Length: 77
Length: 235
Image (cartoon, rainbow over all chains, first blue to last red; front, side, top):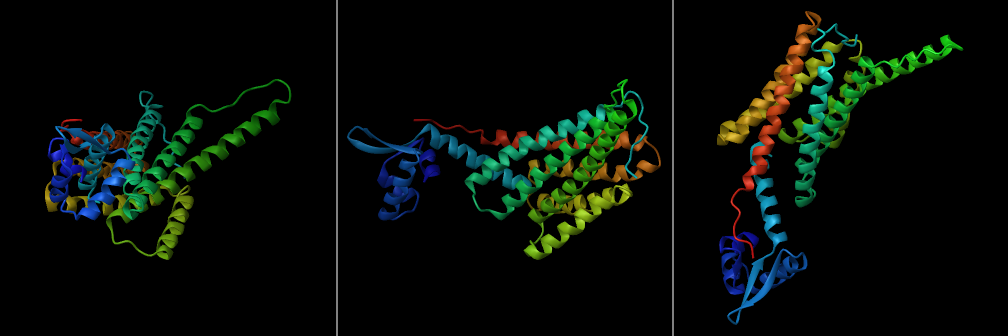
């Protein structure tokens, strides 16, 4: 989900996120709550539309994940 | 016999710096691996990796302490009751050097073994415990036969390097190539330590080779840290 948001430039409409992350509505709702709780994303209103945006924490977390994947690839684990 | 070798004046004490550098590199890696483990909590490979790097770091601390005692012996002379006091301090020194070296060897052997577990098919707990016990014995008895320790390290490093080589051949990733070089150089350093009885020069060469190996390991890891590169738009 975080990668999907980042690929859309850091902000995405919930419906688009649902399609991009290939999730059912119920799944999206549950995962989104978790991400909101952990302050990795937040909801904003723009032009009367709701958007989900990446927070600084979310962005840092994504960078850490990318770093970890590269570490795993390098070390072959 | 523990390898106290007569070193050239210019190198005397420099091995201490090399070992401190190794401690710093390993601690730096350990710090980041623990961070990754927090993301992938419960991952067995990470658990082995953390165990391995933690043991290796502690083992080098033992080595540094032992070398520190050798280079800076504490033999304070007092004028009253001289004999008793000096003897006690000398004994304490010998005791610390002995356990420093044994600690270094046992922990580094276990560290390398746990690193092999990251790459090979993982055996059961009983097998791990038995192998660990045997490695502790090797480390302990290697105090009188240092060759055994270096040969065992060489073999364990060979297994690890072979696994990294296979990994590199499968995807030809440039950072894996750097890691492969780093492990190969550390492997060579263990090979060189084996020839210590022929000439003390081998000790100097092996220490320098080890330094290059850990330097390359650090460079590899710095490259991994830089991989986060593409920073996209923040909110």
